[in-house]
Image (cartoon, rainbow, N blue to C red; front, side, top):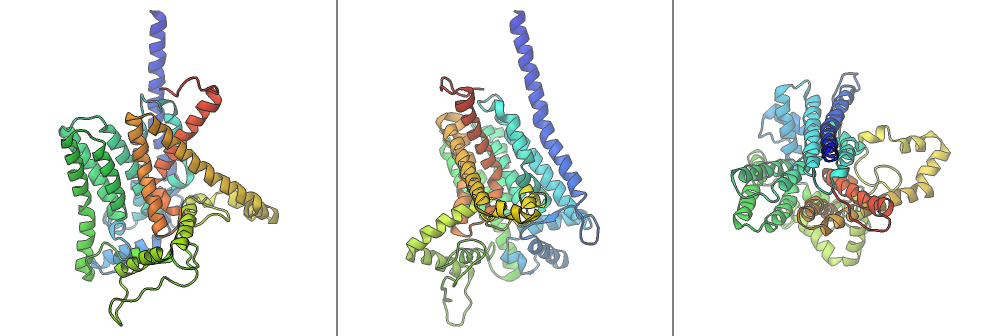
Length: 457
């Protein structure tokens, strides 16, 4: 009786410690990031509180337009780029114009901290219970992903929302369609609406995830609620953007940069990356002397892909590589030059130290190491996916919910520009799958080399 009691006490103590760690880790990361933000200085020595991201200047120009002319400002950046993120910044400016950048950091960092905790907490009492703390540490302290909440850019808020939506759907995995089910499903719709508002291509991600979620339900009422509540709520976001642009510019569009983006990543002699080389895809206006519209550009690029299948396959392969490329080194490809991690990246420090360091990092050794890093991370992600898939039930659902948003972002990058920045919004999910893959390898090769048992809770 005493032995059984001691075991229960030890188990209870472990659970208390684990619960404390799962809360402490994101809070510690949040605190450290706020300290870092308070030390981000501008050129005049004043505290800024956030760094500019790849499109930071464009977002701030949009905010200037909103501050000057109001919500229906005709500032060009608000129609070319999606207006959602500048609108959210504009609302924070209403609280404090002088400290709006620091407010962005606080909101984005707090949202990410909560998203990490909520997501990881879904695996309590499952086969992943043993690596929950490891996953929490990986999410909270991954340099690029975590520090992106200190950047003026859409990537971090979407990464946080994806952790939250995945956690909410898993929370509803085996629940009946009662009032709480309706409330939480509506919450998923709101989060997807936020994602779509600041990055409209998340419309596709929403449809893919929600369709899978609905089809995984056996209860017809649950299916109807999921489809109607999530899609209906999410649809409000593009409708708001279209209405704003219609009033301000007379164009009923979400934004006008899709065709321009697709054009950069296509062509006879371009690489598929952000830096376009060679001639543009030929595209004539529908009427002589007229302008080539964004929709016309989209159709021209799609037609070019169909007419050049061999070049298309090569471009798609290159874009896939760029999507997963490292953040630094000669194999890096994308718009992450402002990645905060690069400010202290030891690899860059070695490359800049002297000629030998530059040769080591940018030469054959560095290129080989970078290629192995890319292949290893992608392999771990797939291993994690397939192991979860093999477990059926809750774990198979988790595998799909984590992988489908990554796949959609990957496909979008293939169709537009090969850019490693495009993977940040789903990076929390890919890190999770990589952690699961590493757990499977550790268990098979280290703890259980003869494969006599399966990982258990």
